[in-house]
Image 1 (spheres, one colour):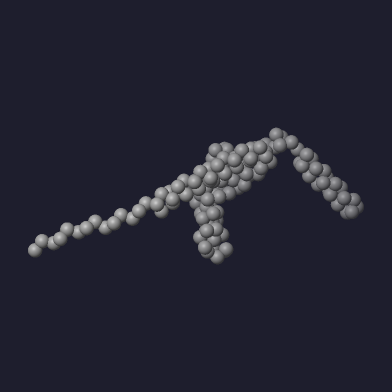
Image 2: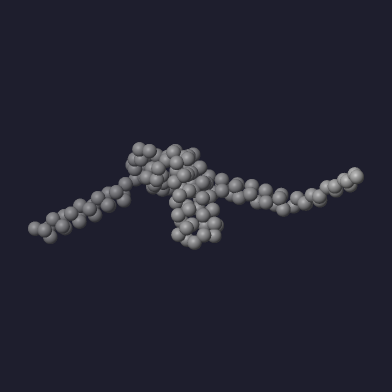
Length: 141
């Protein structure tokens, strides 16, 4: 009897997975606290920037990861989202591939624009000649 109930349970589980996998993207309901696209774009831009800063910090891997996780908490707080709503929203957009593609197109453009601005500022700073010291007037006695 146990063997029969185990097989039935396995078939029901497999069937449930199959039905879920065959579900159309449009049929997936959005999470209750879905982060709007524009907010998701801004959040992802900041997250990727944070990750790059943590990687470039030159710290050991565990310290870099701890720094990133701490900064991410602050970022979530600043955007008034929590970790679970971010994960649920990201999964929802990932199921809807076109949505995630559109979001990441804007994210990539935003990061490229930031990089270009930083490069321009860096180039401008390196080409400005150092101003010679102004001559000091002779002292009167």
